[in-house]
Length: 334
Image 1 (cartoon, rainbow, N blue to C red):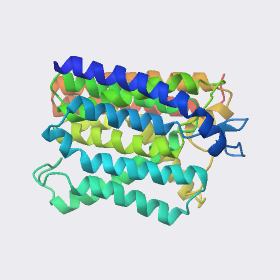
Image 2 (cartoon, rainbow, N blue to C red):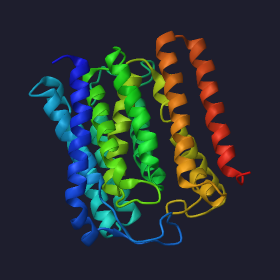
Image 3 (cartoon, helix red, strand yellow):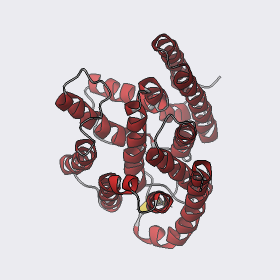
C-alpha cells in the first residue's frame, strides 16, 4: 500500500471507528461520567464526558495497524504507553478530581518518558547541551498537554484546532517534510476527531471529550509537532499551534500577574470571553478554524521556502493573525 493510501486508510478507519465507539459508549458515559454545569462551564445542562476514550483508542489502534510489525511501530511504544497512562489519569480526574500536585506529577512522568526516550542524536538546536534541550522539552511538553486541556472548553473547539493541524501534518508527511510515524498518527488523530465531531455539535452536544481525551490528544499532537521541529521545520511547528499557545499562555500570565489561583478552572481564556462578549459558539470555533487554516498555510510556505529570512516574516504574519483574533475576542461583538 502506498504512503498516500495508508494515510487515507488511517484517516477513514479512525473516523469510522471513533464514531462507532463513541455511539457505543454513550450510555455508559451518561451513567458514570456526567459533567454538570457550574459557574465556569460553557454548557447549560448535564452532559456525558469521556468520548476521548473513543478518540484515543481509534488513533492508537489504527496507527498500529497502519504501521504493522515494523521498527517504527516498536519505537512508538513509549509514546503510546504514555498516552494510555495519561488518558487513565484524565479518566479518573473526570470522575473524581485529583489534587493538583499528584495530577501534574503523573503528567510530568508521562511526558518525561516520551522526552527521555528520544534518540540521543536528535536535537532541535544542536549547539545546546542535550540535557538542557531535554529539560526544556519536558517543561514545554507538560505545558502543551495542559493547554490543550485548558482550551477544550467549547463544543468543537478541539476539532477546530486539531483537524487543521493534523491535516497539515499529514500533508507535510506526504510531501516528505515529516517521517511516516508522526504522519500516520496525525492522519489517524484527525480522522478520529472528525468521527467525534457529530456528537459534539455546538448547541446540541451529546458528549464531551473529557480530560481522558484532551490530555492524550495534547501529548500525541505535541509529539507530532516535535517530530516536525526535529526535521528542521521549527517555524512551521510553532505556527501550527500558535493560536492555542497564545490564548493559553497569555491567559496564564494575566492570571499570575493578578495573583489569581491560575491552577483552578476559570472562564478567562480569550475564546471564553468571546462568548461572554456576544459571539456564538459557532462563530468562535469558526473563527478559530479559519485562523488555524491560515496558520497551516503559513507553515506550509515556511517549509517550501526553507529560508531563515522568510521564516521571520511568516512567523510575524502568524503572530499578527492570532493577535487580531485575540483582540476581536476581547471586545464586545459589534
